[in-house]
Amino acid sequence: MLVLGDAHADDPAKRRALLAAYRAARENPAVEAETALQLGDLHHYDLPVPTWFVGGNNEAFDVIESMRRGDTSLTASRPHLLASTAVELDGLRVVGLSGTYAPTQYDRPRVELRGERRRHFVSEDIECARALGDADVVLCHQAPHGVFRIRGRDVGCDPVDEVLRALSPELCLVGHYHRHAEGSVDETRVVSLAPAWERYYSLDPETLESYENLGADAP
Image (cartoon, rainbow, N blue to C red; front, side, top):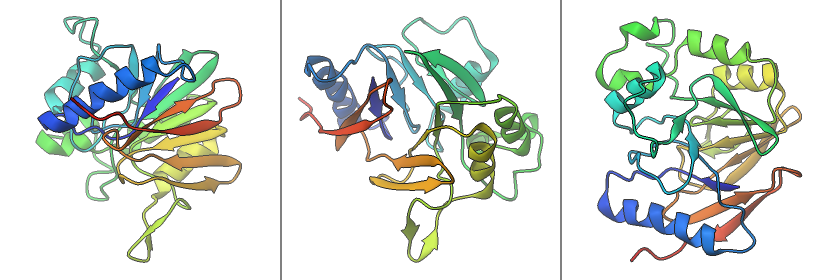
């Protein structure tokens, strides 16, 4: 299974790099690249293989809200948003938590978020994710605690910790920070991904081992 970090594909060069990563993975015999997971800041919603992703803090938020509503007018080529929802893929139960944490927005109802504030998750999103029961893999844009520190501060947040402790996944994959790092929350292995313009990853559904691959040069 192909796994990709942040794309920021509203930028033409980064969009070319994103699509080049899909091509390189499909040409790599070591990667089963017929399905993909992506960790947010996608910003391009016409992809070559079925892709399940979490919304980040840089998206076309009208499109993301349409996906949240299950808008059937979206074309089949659109990726599938995981927003406190789960999917069964290659024998894995994958849960996705979309958005980032903002203390000033966290206790507001989601329907009251406007404009770019829609990039955040709120408490009801966390409760919906916690209620999903269990997971093999959790995708999130913002990290739990214990992954890495930036300028001496642990960048994790308590609501993501709560989701991991409720679902007890074996693996959590994180976007947002544009760097590779690894850590753990209790028994959950946490991997923060480098961005898609630097490299792509593959995930073995049977062992949940992830592997880094050099990214392909965009044409």
